[in-house]
Image (cartoon, rainbow, N blue to C red; front, side, top):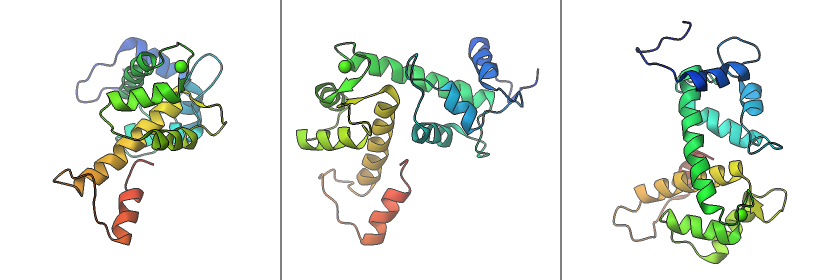
Length: 178
Ligand code: CA
């Protein structure tokens, strides 16, 4: 067995998918292999920016590639997001529209105005469809979470407002998962 890591067992089904994605058969998925493997549905793949984000989040070794253990974690993470996405896609259109996004963010505990939800939607909807695809929805939620955590660290009393210096502000953004 090529991959033995801390005695962990790989899920064999997920490992099969890994091997199918590993077209160069070198035991690692590079950016292009990840891009081909991650799909929204039968017709669309994840955008490059979402693939980069997923690699950055799950590349524990820090070599810019995804090994079978990292892939299994990534796969399970996306399976959870798939459930969340389907739960909020009330009309089963395969996409999250503005009303569904508003409801989703509220359910996740965010208190955001309608106008901000509209801004968030347009930011992550580059094709101007008025909807978020699966990968766009994940990316929006990850960035929102990352920036919210940065804000919360500077807002220990949870007042909903902070005072930050210019470079501190830039650091908050640059150290977020954006
Ligand atoms: Ca929908």
